Image (cartoon, rainbow, N blue to C red; front, side):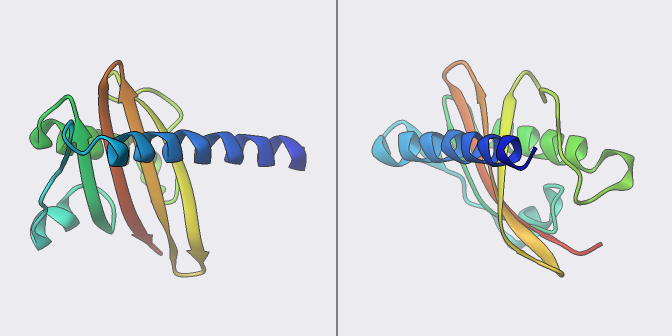
Length: 125
């Protein structure tokens, strides 16, 4: 079972890593969305630290981010996981920098040529 969990985590990391490399390698097609302090706190996590999109607007990226976080926190569990598509996007999440007070995560949501890349911090709730 531990080996299966390790494989799943590795695959999730690679999906996020591949999506972030694709956005970083082709900056002309990716857009880093500016977020003010209020937006960073209103997108569903304790704090959204970055948002980048490809093939869609920043507003659509924000909607996908909110949908993902609503899925992740459904049932009142802030540390929950989203196991379904959100707004047609398939999202993969990689959590790192875990501590007793929370964690930091990277999320890549893909739908065809459309991509949403989000990093967020989830505090203890």
